[in-house]
Structure formats: C-alpha cells, structure tokens
Image 1 (cartoon, one colour):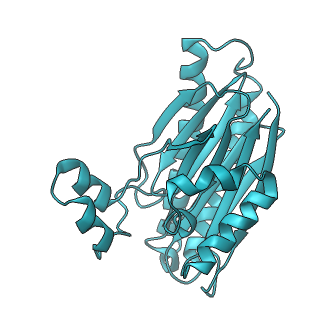
Image 2: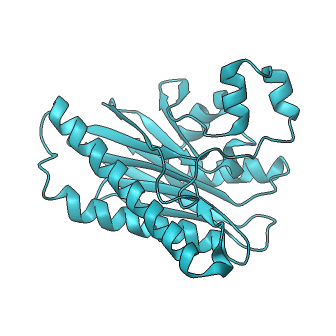
Amino acid sequence: MKLTVGSRTETGPRKMNQDYLGSWPELGLFVVADGMGGHAAGEVASQEAIDTVHGMVKRGKASLGLEGPLTEERSRTAARLLEGAVQAATYIVYAMAEIDRGKAGMGTTITAMMRFGGALVTAQVGDSRIYRVRGNDAVQLTEDHTLINWQLKQGIITPEEAKVSKQRNVITRAVGSRDYVQVDTTVSEPELGDAFLICSDGLHGYLRTEEIPPILAEGGNFSVNKLIELANSRGGKDNITAIVVEVS
C-alpha cells in the first residue's frame, strides 16, 4: 500500500493557531488535533497530544507484528496501540494542567489514522473528522463527540434545529479534561484509489460532504489548498487544518 499525502494548517482570522497536525507517511500515522483553552494552553495541549501519540506509535508499532494479512488479532492489537497512545496523551495533558494552574482546563480533540499491513485503524475523541472518498462518494468515518450530535441521536432536537443551535461547539469528549477518556476505534481495509480527509471543524463546518470527492480528486496539496480556500471564502472564523491521504 502506497500512501500519498498533502497537509496544511493555518491560523485563519484568529490570533493564534491552536490546531496542530502530525503526518508521518513512513510510519503510516496521521493525526489532527484542535486545542482549547486560553493563554496558549490549547496550542500546548494539541501539540503535546500529537507528540505523545507519535512517540507511543513509533515505539510500539515495530515490535507488535502488525504487518501481514489482516487478522482479528492484528486488528485488536492495532486498535489497542492507537487507543493507548491517545490515552497516554490524555494523561500527559491532564497532568500538565494540574501542575500549571495557568493551563487549567486546557484540552484538545484527537483524530488519528494509522496504517498497519494493508489495513487502517482510526481513533476518535472530539469533533474533528475523517472522511473516506471512494469513487464519487464521501462517507464520514468518525462520530462527532458533541452535545448537538448526542441530542440528535436521542431525538431531542431535529436536524433543522441543530443547524441554528447555539450549542454547536459544545464537546462531550476531549483529551486532557480528565485523566481518562473514552476513545472510539475502527478498523477497515481500504481499496486502491481511496482517499481520506482528516480535518478540524474549522474546515468541515464550512463544507458539504458531497463537495469532498471532486476536490480530493485533484490530489495532495492541491486538494488541501482548495479545501482551505473554500472554508475561508465562506467566512471561516476558526483555525483550519486538513490532511489528505491517497491510497495507491
């Protein structure tokens, strides 16, 4: 499996970029984090979280026998590795905030994808997203951990009410708000020609799912730049981060 990657993060109209991205094609690891917290704390949380995930995966992947045909055991091992890396990041960010009261309340989303053999495992905390494009169809692979999404699933509000709700940015899970977080993991086998978009809400909040396939068809950094330009042209008010991964 060959992975071709394009990536970019930008501040947008905000004074500071609290988004952070990690892209290591040789390791097959791609991560987007959207930090939260004042006094640069969100920036610290997102960078520290991604650095921790990278370190854990780099140390663990080589020794776990993840290469080879997809088996149930390899799937479980890969999911445990990526989940454990996110849990380690959670503990580190939480501990940093406990030690430095100026960073109290800082946290970050984490959305990660890791290749192992011919398969992919994803890990999700928060409201950044992963989309898979196959042919002309785009599918959101991750679930938003937001109050709005929970209310929609419970039937408390309608999709129309969700679009205008003032609670759209309330996150129900974050890395660092406690010393433990529930991490969603999934394992899948990509097909040749698949493309994946990993992005913060500063992008997907201004993007319609059906717009993704033709943009990703342009490939790599061309796709990334066009996506970011589109968000900005629609009045983007947040940091914007995107990674595009193509499978060939």
